[in-house]
Length: 565
Image (tube, rainbow, N blue to C red; front, side, top):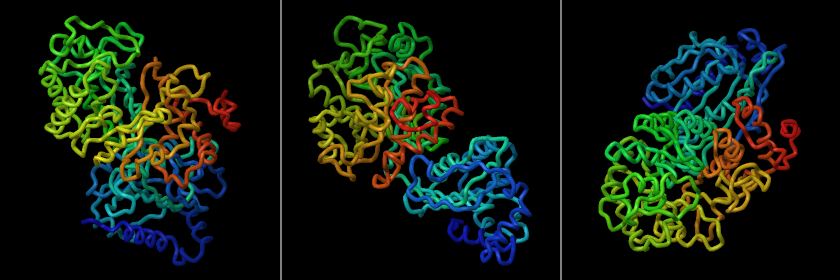
């Protein structure tokens, strides 16, 4: 039975009111009095610890904060509908988050929609704080929308799908105060209605130039989930390393994985197919779509070193290992038909383990000696191969947009930011292809914050926190409109990354800036308001042990931030 969440919430609130006292709705003083008498823990004399709604990142569409409190220590039960089994894992994640603030056991109840409506008045206990996680497929704002109501003894999170419930829980987690033995952890009552601006809110991690362990990749995925990203673009291959096992081409990892930027040797620097599938599943559990990237026909020096006879044209084995950072230095041999066997074998292994719709092929920065027709023919065949395996091609527009005859479902990703950059991007849009916006000067997190930043590049300029926030994806390119753009994607390339700590420094806090660009309504965003909310996130980042860029170095007037420098 598909229940109406609105009818359910009305009924549930009515039950709560009636069971507390006959005139619950008419006398607020009586409500508070009864709550203090019946609750396991009361707010009457305790010092309270809570988080204001105005600190949420990304900014919700609508948030109305009340004056009451939901006492977290009184939380006893989470209810979910049996018709949404994915919510069991979501509920478990929520219990873990609450337990980090208040050590206690929370019961998860999976019940039918009819039983949700048939809750018996005599059995409904106001001595227990309840959380309800529900799905309403007709919720305004789409599948990732959510509506959260926090009452003094009830929290309901209703999503347009399970993904929407999960996004709502990320908001709820931001409202959880940090653990403080001297204060009572509470949530302030209120209502939040929220949904994303763009359907694609992504982040790309370059594991080819700098290799990350499986656990480190999962850590990055957790960062994305916390700020409502829904796409993880996994850059698995490049000149410096091949990072995915392909059993029919074993030398790709035996030879091609043993290098990285600045590393003559990189032992076991690849993911087995089981490890890759583990990462895909980890992302799926957080409602994040993983998009693997197999970079072709350029950026293939690692593959050429592994199989020079099959993939290479120049007759001699390419220099290997390659630890530099130059681009436009390698290409598959277009005159050898074996390159298509190679590509299909790779796509086959990756596609069958990828739950998302897309496979990224890069498709840019081929060497100057590559003829355009050879490139175009290859990309059309690559698109057909990917389609054959049930997936859709994504590629960088600066070269892919020059190819005629691409299917309209192919997606282009824009990165160039020069004045005359955008003809190929606009060409793709005019042909009906959707565009992901990743202008390097705004979204590339490998760029230095400023000239004094210890790591990073500056070929596209400096990318301060403010710069990464202050832009509108729909106004970046003349001729590109809202209907052409499906989203925004940040990218962390690995040329100057040597450790996870380096990656954290480059990611944070610009990841939060771009989360708000991709999620929140443009007309509601302002740098002055965001910078204040950002300062309030620092305690959370420190609690997680994240090495972030200090805000004082950005000239932000935050006493809290300056005290940490």
